[in-house]
Image 1 (cartoon, rainbow, N blue to C red):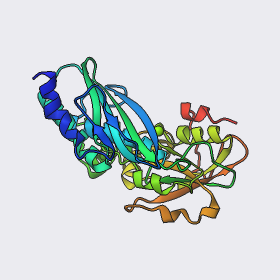
Image 2 (image 1 turned 90 degrees about the horizontal axis):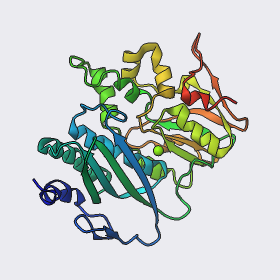
Image 3 (image 1 turned 45 degrees about the horizontal axis):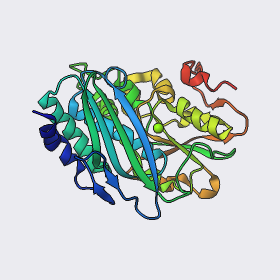
Length: 318
Ligand SMILES: [Mg+2]
């Protein structure tokens, strides 16, 4: 199959239904888009490398799903409405069944999250996927990392640590327990919190998506906002499947494991009860408070608990 047949078969369908403002999409030297009036353009680009960001033997449908969801999560973190996406795919061999699976996963998630593909490129080489997502937000309303102020509540959506635990189980045959499939699903098909991100516009003072672990990502908010934090370890949202599988390691995974793609945001008390932000049954947990003193302090540690010493934590020491 030549490049043009491959574009026609796998990539053109990913442009449907087209996004608002599309002048021309896949198949020309450039795509051309007219930015809807009253909106700013937000862009983010992410690269996933086989063996680094995902196990080399991951199913192609899951890989397509995960790539789209991970990229969309950056739009959620900024409060942007998904608009469209550009795809660059490098793969070792043009394996038709792999391509069909990858395009299927990508297409299902792109339609679910409202991110039609407007252009791209495929080349031969080690398996690498790059997606550039583009979103829209009215001027002055997007979320940043730099607005957290002392007294703001620190909140997180969903549960943390599940995807980190999944890395122990992915690809291990025979692990069909419900708890295992629950955490693996969280790694393979993370849910970008897009409607939550948009609901946080003009309310949350700072926001980030948890891709590298809570301590590392909250650390970016603290550094950009020049503040510190007190975290209530008893309030960290840990799922039952994670507690079942990880036992006493669950808390550390919740603090330091990445890949969950929940939103961590700071919320001024004047904005009311953060419970108003619950969407689709996804809980919002208040896990701490912003303080003026730099660094992170921990409340309610379990007996004998020691603060994690990995890289995410080093960044914090006051
Ligand atoms: Mg991010």
